[in-house]
Length: 218
Image 1: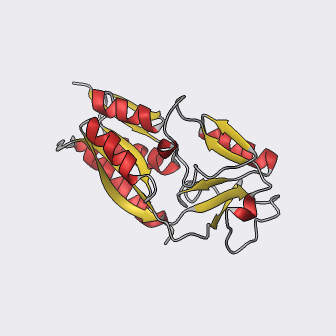
Image 2: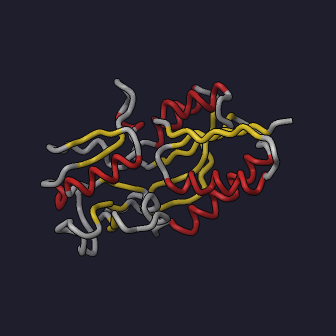
């Protein structure tokens, strides 16, 4: 019998690695798996409908109430796996601020802010970037991870990350610098309320927890 498994997540590289590790751990000669990059609302819809067993998201103190309300309405729950300090991601070789020890939002005011576009009308709390609600004069939306990285490099722009987004890539394009804030981001997974995970789902969560703990910024 063919194995099936699917994960929907925000645009995180650590999710890709955890998914690959789960596939390898599960083994088998016949399977049908899926890894889907989604917005928050897309993740909720996928997990609620059963299209994906799990979803991967972040929460911050500023958005936790709205996120939890949306999950509760959908019959889902959030499982926190790690806490990480937010960082600024910018070009590793060309950005004037790349050697800073830390940065403030004010330091970045003159540079383009690159972020992931959400569904039309989606609450700002569902954005994938911490501090997304702060007004910015230069904003560029995109829909995939590769475009975000390329735009940041081409335009000397920046985005705000979990501090883990770039940490497990080859590091040749982007550099992460601590953002001056006391806020911390919770990273974890979403499942149906009281769901019992499949074996491959357990493999995925175990791998994800290891990745997050290894690369989280304190």
